[in-house]
Length: 405
Image (cartoon, rainbow, N blue to C red; front, top):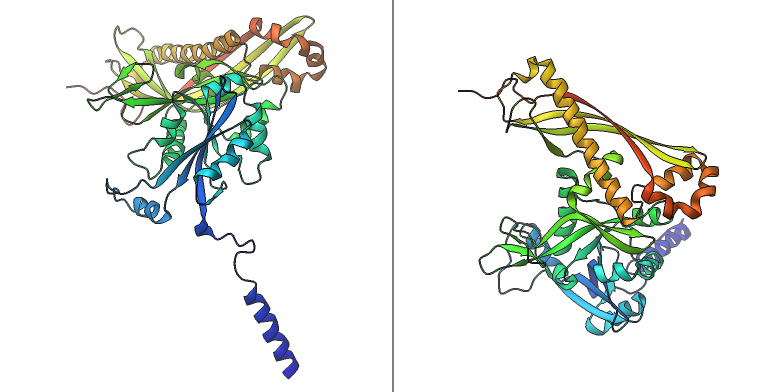
């Protein structure tokens, strides 16, 4: 019995002795990276890495509690940059400017500059996928403007710029489909598939003016914009090289084909000059299938959407007028078809198959794809795409007739 007690005591003592940081890297001795940005200097042929680091964890918790930090106090994050001949080399040079070992497991936003995108993302993407600490669940962005300003930007409702960017992406994703919100893992997934080009959301850095308004770095004034960053549109690529920009209204078709469209749109009210009807999609189902007959290659897209009326500026008893509803349904279908056509037109203009139409042929008709794969770059810009849209208007809101005196 005594021997068993001694053995139990020894086991407990050994277990207690093993408690602690196994690698002697205490959490308080680390710097936690929240966002990472990559840039490229073609004149010097150097890569630049810029990181946003949590400054003091106590300050971040205080900001979460709802209090605004004192203007004299340091910000709850710190921005650090370094150059190198390769992305990894640049990252290694960060240690020269910080007193703590950097930890990358909390990185939530990954930013690529426009200059880097034009030179090619492959070296950076290779580094990010090989790095053991970095997670592929971060949100990727291509920034139009100064990368450093983006990383230093402060968001009025958030504690750190990285959290502000992450939450702004989520807000845009659910409220307005003008931005392709995705995770970094999805970029790798698309890049590795034949007949599929990557599309990464655009962040435009806004510059505050003396009167308190803000505008883009290209000089376009927009006094209504308050945040330091405007999300909308996307960067289209061929392989890993930037090919051109999609504007915000050219992204809606991308969401429609992907079955993720839940935003609103306006159509002219039937038979009423100057009146409009605002509708919002409730749900949708998109189906694509290829048509390959000899040398003729085409794509058919079928979209079925359920919508509801959100706004009406006319005078009709809309729910009692079947002719009005039928006309409104046709106009709605035409509006959604125009969004898809706009996306396809821009995609063919840039030669960037961001909808994965080639990948559709690869998956559905692999033998035909092997015959046209080498010529896809020439086929795609002239590819015929037939679009059929059907709309069902399910609801008109909480009232039937329009508001009247």
